[in-house]
Image 1 (cartoon, rainbow, N blue to C red):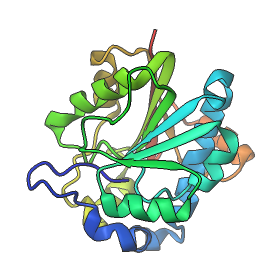
Image 2: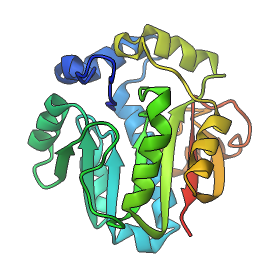
Image 3: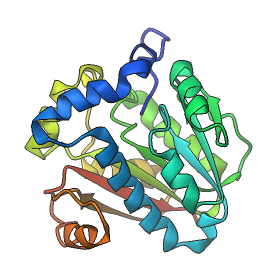
Image 4: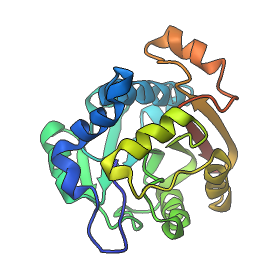
Length: 236
């Protein structure tokens, strides 16, 4: 997932777009798991969330910081219309080649190139720890602008209190400037932007592949054990 680098004006992920998966797999090598596994697990959690809100499944869904669209082929089977946006033009070019039936757009990291109230659901997976702290609230406000009343925004992030997660982030070359967000920080971002009914759940306390293991993983969702977490907020 890519995000803006406002200090030098160049998207930091352009340089890694061609070897994005390889760099993350290198950092994950000690675990025996690869990026495709974790992308699939988070997609499955996202699909579970969507299926609890049938209106969003049939509407337009926005992926903020979509990167190279790793798991979109799996996700598009479960929703009506998917749109991806990213600051990295190189990553968007790869995503378009991989998923020619999905709409992709380049943006400046803050201002989304869409009309007001255009989407019924939005999500950002492992994006906000790359967004400069001063730009995070602005980006959440923009996501709020393009969402319909009643829509939901889901932010997936690394859990900074998980030592394994910290090790992986510190081992990944393009995470060297990342500033991880604690759960309460993410909840505050949504609250300040006007979202309601905000809650968070920790995920991947175990390798949660498949519905059975996800049910077990959910038993730990209120404890800060998972490698990652998601925070959800709804517009009224």
